[in-house]
Length: 404
Image (cartoon, rainbow, N blue to C red; front, side):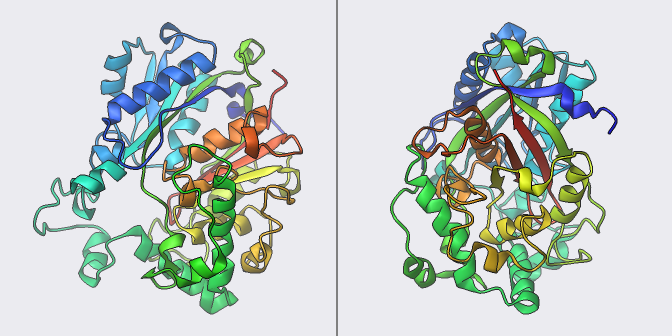
């Protein structure tokens, strides 16, 4: 295989701010905390950082969802940048990390700080969380503005949330593959069991199948525990050129392959196969860029904004056959920390908190480094996959352990 540009990059540093419900701190405050920790973790100083990227940036959806803009972080940290990037379009929340790897590979920057910050929990508590109108670009969530694009067809029917749109995927899989609610429940139960070992997790109390099945329905067939937990927090990583890896204080996480394709219709409700959507194409393009196989993956950190997304990723990444994710996760043994495919070992977004995919990347790096504390896998992982996004918005990344 010819050289892949992403292999010129490593994740050299990781950092998180405090994580919690309604912390009452500003998004910039949390971002600076995570950024300084990631920079120090990489063995660098602010003067070494010459690239900056985030998702979604530009205030898309309001600060509680988008976090601070790159100009705000640039100024707060007094950075001198050769490259910067921020935007909502592309292969899901992992987009800025992929962009950073390519920037480093192209020589546009040597050390790129990438961050993702949310303060949705505090915003919900204060009544200040922006509604779907602002996310759709209306500029206001007061009253009922006019909507264009796909929103004009969904909002009149009450489909105002990604929960509604992805419930369509779940319901289709119930119809085509016989997916059962108790099978979905194992994603939530597995996450909660792992979160019990994560001191930063939002929810750590035990969760039983009876608890899951008794929870109120949010949008059929998804219940409360199928939906991620809004929180406040920031995650930052430093993406560096691979030649810095020997100098990094911790084992660098090497980027082996990325998946960025979208070959179907870019629509939440008009995709050509409503049982799979963008995960299909992102996964296929990632595997086409590596000699590694699904059997080589030691841990999977798969997006669980809603449990059904994780089920789709399990199939599209090749860990089980099409339509068989329900039986694959049933009983929880295959996806447990001591199973063949440890899944979302921090608790994922369902229990550790909705850090919008970046918590999964942070956890993958901790596991590859052997630094995950009480939840560290007994068998040292050498290969991790991180998959972000649902619907037509999806991206994936394979990381491998460096020797450090």
